[in-house]
Length: 179
Image 1 (cartoon, rainbow, N blue to C red):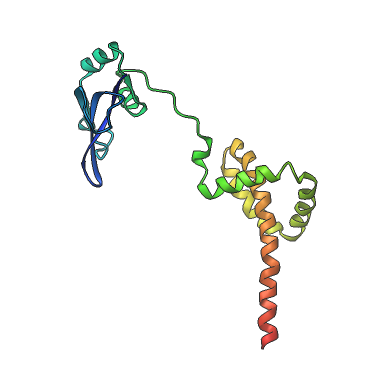
Image 2: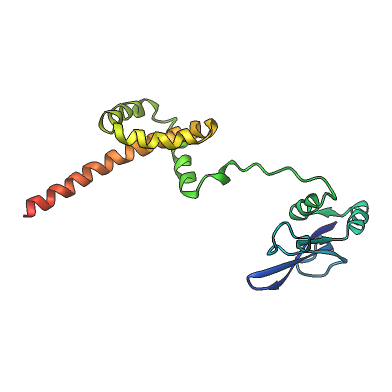
């Protein structure tokens, strides 16, 4: 199957790509049928030299059955040669990696211990009203959909400081005993 894809060139830390027509079985930087353009990702998006493509040759090869890769189809969409592909659905992309792991663990724990979490919530509210106010302020800035997702995270964070406080108190008491 014919593919319209990028073939990498350039030197280390400064890539430049050729937009080529190649058989799908050939290696990325290997043999190709025809070079139809170039792409320089280091240039700003507003410069014309960033993407150079022969539109007539692209249309010709597409009529012959060549399929563009996802990256090339985005480039062709930017130049309005073909419609822009649909954006991928990756809701985890916006969440930092640290929080992704925590949210995955919480979602696993939530169905198991629904009744047990209610009691620590009440204790956390009594002991740390100031800490809750600080944590709620960032939630107000976020959209409602994201705030709903992060409510379980905030509850877990409230429980964690409780565990840390007794340790801190124990550490404070130990030096007093040593003196």
